Image (cartoon, rainbow, N blue to C red):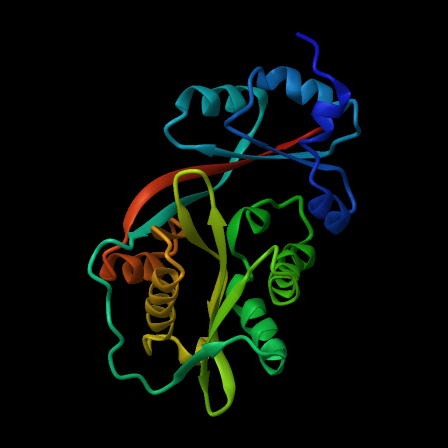
Length: 249
């Protein structure tokens, strides 16, 4: 089997490559013959491959392990079926609104605090830690500026300051419309006040108004407080995925 060069180039991640200054590729469980893909990507001067694979696909995970891929993190996807009874807001000492440009600097600071040492980038000792954090900062910046990345950002506000946010993106396919969380955070000093739960209730109500069938959010399995929040809102888990990295020596 010969893989065409233009097909192999589809695996290259321009965002990661530009950010880290080295050729990065991304693969998923849709691949076949992973050893051949690793060989072909090497010809394109690839330095790092990031794989995101469903945990049920043990065969592929084992194949990648045998090639030298190593574990970095596991994410689970929480889903809320909008046909169910919707949660309601309780009394809260803050307000909920949509993103405005005046929130920008506060959202950036929240992201810096919330995503330091978070996720598969930080789990890789070979990656520059400052650049790992910049990945998340760039992500929320793109959410604020580009509706292709996020088409709504719910913001919790207190005393005219943003204290939490959740960026959302709406998707339509042949069978359904659904809303997905993109990135979210709460300012450290306002945690344990129910801020993120309130934002997520608002996101459920927003998705319902859009006529969506469901809303989903990804969470690291080590983020126990967030998993507790989604469980308390009657979300159920629909997917689990492992992230693995491969470095060319």
